[in-house]
Image 1 (cartoon, helix red, strand yellow):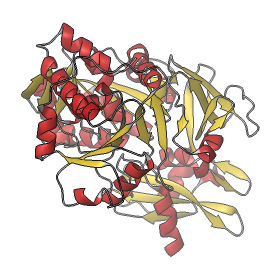
Image 2 (cartoon, helix red, strand yellow):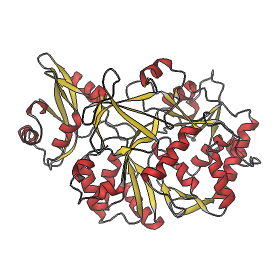
Image 3 (spheres, rainbow, N blue to C red):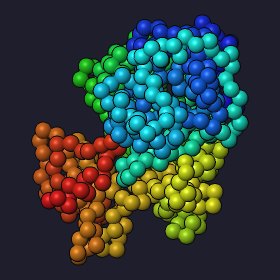
Image 4 (tube, rainbow, N blue to C red):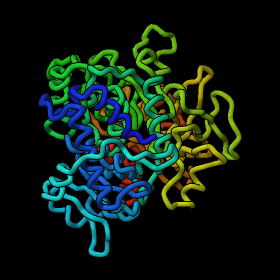
Length: 505
């Protein structure tokens, strides 16, 4: 089934329900939302775009985003969301790689360079007569029918180590993800509001489906992005707000709340994921904002649906295993089958570390036109995540970093996250990232990049805190103090850049 049918059904059953907001201003009800999507869909069909075709969105978050996205689905085509923070040349590469027939882009100096003279795709700028005419087109009365295995979203990975890969997400994948949200993450009611502060091209946008299905509100901050103080005030005015946030966003939101004396009034749920949330940080978040958090672990290849750590586990301070569970990413979601595999793809028992593998109805069909990447990504029908971890006897998954980030020093395995967790207990350490670097004696040594508070700790102090919490051989051999850590658009630390910095010194 075409996921756009959820919008069509909601618009039919609740036409006057408020749908799209710019801050607190109502822009459209569900009838208007569906009408605009149907008009864009009809304009695409008129251009010969339909099932099997791809249409790219190189757009920042805006109230136009969802109508355009659903317009693509209304036509039966596959949406290719591209992060608006990418360079126009990077966006152009994705547009060409996806064979997009049309690209929606924001009016900007770079827009004209998205397509070259040789490209046959049509470029539609939002601030143009062409787009205005598309919006005025006689709308499709109902979305084009699609089968469960047809592609609906081409999800491009962040590409921190090379060219991004396009994960083909089918209608079935997106529906499995959405239904698992209700079962494992959070219930959604019509009076709720989804707030889009993270890029709608990725995790935040994936959660639009559950809110459309329930006829909830969709709120775009006036700033169009993540401003912690703005979000705290907006949530207080809108009430029942849910949002997806990377751990770095959660940390900034908590700091802003402490600064202005806010308690997170109006925030219903913050789903966090996309990177490690350190125990000290989530403890502080719970203390300041209360039991509003749910953690998910997933990848673009298995969108948002590998594991979940529910609100009750995060808030259950009376449980004897509470602190240990805070350091996990929860249990397998209902739609996911989880396994820890050794180097020969054999399943490992509880508490043994191996590569995390997942399978289920939410797992992508594969990467677009990339058989080599598909061969590496799949082992039989298991998606190999590239992340290392173990499952404890209660079924909680504990991450031990990406396989490529494992440090092997003197023949011993060292997982950067446990070193980072130890260093973050020092009150003067604001952020830290640990990597390995080649060493002629040890093979690799541990190096810690440290962002300090105003009072920078000494290496001796950091050594002392490490030896009090972890094995001596895991202690960093070197500390590098930096003002900030390099991160991608989703808040993940770019360890490839840290390794490059070490090679230059």
